[in-house]
Structure formats: C-alpha cells, structure tokens
Image 1 (tube, rainbow, N blue to C red):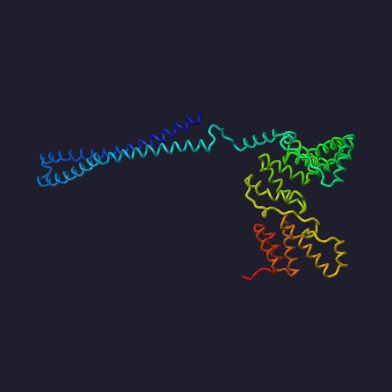
Image 2 (image 1 turned 30 degrees about the vertical axis):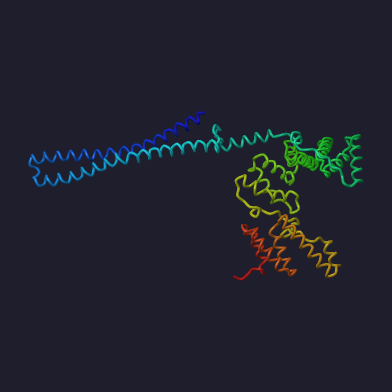
Length: 417
C-alpha cells in the first residue's frame, strides 16, 4: 500500500506540473499583449510631458506619436485576436494536455500492474540464490516424486525369459537377503523398465552390503531412483551421487547427474561448469555425452554464459598416442593381412563409415575430423572430403588450434584465391 500511495502522489505532482505549464503558457500570452498596450499608452503621456518641458520639438513629438500609435494599434489587434479566436484554441489545448496526462499516468499504472510485481520486495542476487537453495533443500522426496509417476509393469516379450523373471521374483520373496539374487533382480527389473521395483531391490542390496557396497552399486541405485522419479534427481538420489563422488571424484555419471540436479533446481551457474568440465574429460562413447551436448547451450544461457557447443572443449580420444585416435586393434590388423584386396577395402570403408556416423551423431575431436578428411581423400572420395572439411571449418570456427589441424588435413582441398 505504501508503494502505491507514493507512486500515486508522484504521478499527481507530475500531472499537475504538466497541466499548470499548459495553463501558464496561455495566460502569459494574454498578459503580454495587455502589458504592451499599457506601456505604449504610458509612452504617449510621456511625450506630452517632454513637449511641455521643451525636450522635444513639435515635429519630433508628432513623429513619435505616430510611431507609438502604430504600435498601440498592433498591440490592440493582438489582444483582440487572443480574446476572440485564441480562447477556444487555448481551451482545446488545455483539454488535450489533460487527456494526454491522464492517458500516460493511467496507462503507466495499468502496464505496471500487468507486467510488474507490486508489493514484491527487492531481491538482491544473494537473496535470490539463498531462496533457490532453500527451495532445493525443500524439494520433493523420492517417495513424493514417485507418487506422481504412473506405475507401468512391463513383462518381457520373450516368454522363456519372462518365466525366468517370474521365478526370480518368487525366489527373492522367499530369500530376500540373497545379494546375488538381489543384484540380478534389480538388473532384470531395470531392463524391463520397472524402475521402482528395480531400485527397491538395489536398495536392499546396498543395505545388506553395508560398508562393503561398491561405488558402482550406489551409482546404479541412484540411477534407478532417477528413472523411477521420471527423470528427477531427488534429495536421496543426490546423496548417493555425492557418496560416489567422494569415493571417485572423476566418476562421469555421478558428475552428470549432479550437474543436471543443479540445472533442474534453478542453479545453472553451478550446473554448467560441471558439465563443461565433464565434456572435456569424457571419451567419445560415454553415455552422458549426447544429453550434455543437447542441453549445455541452454544451461549455459540460463547461467548467463553465451557459448556454443563448438566453442567448448571436445572429449579427448582414448589411447594416449599422439592425437589419441581410436584405430584398429592388433587383431584387426592381423585379420586384415589375411584378407583379399576387396575384403580389405570393404573393411576400411566400413571403418570410415563408422567414424563418419559417430561424428555426425556425437561429434568428436578436431583430430577425428582431420582423420576422416584424410581417409576420404585416400579412398578417392574427394567430394565427401570437401563436405566434411567445410563442415569442420564451421564447427570449429572459433577454435584456431583446431582449425590448424583441420586445414592441414585438407590442404589439398583448399581452393586457390
């Protein structure tokens, strides 16, 4: 209420100033004409006094009377024009000012009431962060989240395997503390999409193992809870992910889910750095790469960071050799040596096709793009090499180090200027 009273008072003062300004301009115009007429009449009387004292001659006095009389007539015409036609014009102007002032002030209040937040207190950034953190700590539990997700019991389409699963369920009802049985039951239920039953079995397994429970068992439990909650990181699942990270700070899956939790709970400023670093530390086949690549630009934007996927560090290739490229194994090379020329060519083309598909779907490092460009040239597929080269230049437009490697691989494709 205090806010509205203050703004209403300020609005009235501003409106009054505008309206009084319009009135005063019109009144000042009429007073000026009347004042000029009064001055000219006083000057005519002064001429008579000067003539009587001998200051002016008769001829000078006559010329002065004529000039002042002309000015009197002009002032009188101006005054009459203001009284006859100016009054209506001034009244119209005043009404226009009144209407415009009311429109501006009323429209401002209506617009603020629609777009603004009257009565809402100021929220400095630290206060907002504190409120978000409080909301995160008070977010729904695992049980509450699961209650919102419909339960769908899925059976295996393979009749024989479905029968084995039913037997396993029956056996575990009779022997609920058998670790191997619980591990197998959790895995089978998760395979069928029965994540609630899966995480119940896995939770019992972790409880039985106690301090001997490996980090992977806890990670599996947290992932099953995440799926059972419909893709939501509950406080219980978060605690498990953090336990995993305490044992293995480099665990990629746990890092992914913790970053996702921050993004879900309004702290993208904490989630984005986790995903950015994980993207750089990952290998091309890691399962969390596709969802990170699909969402990291959005999360970065929510965190106030303008960045594209192409500007972020790409996952290194395993192997440790220069470039870290994944190539054929020793067994592949031995097998290739016993192949015919046609079979070896087919194997090479299949490997190149696999690399191209992986780059198209998951992306890759600059060295992989360079490798694909060179492979196409060796196979004589110059048009394909040119297309990949042009795409790579676009993907790494802002990465000069990557562009250097790509240009070196496509040196023969460069068109002379």
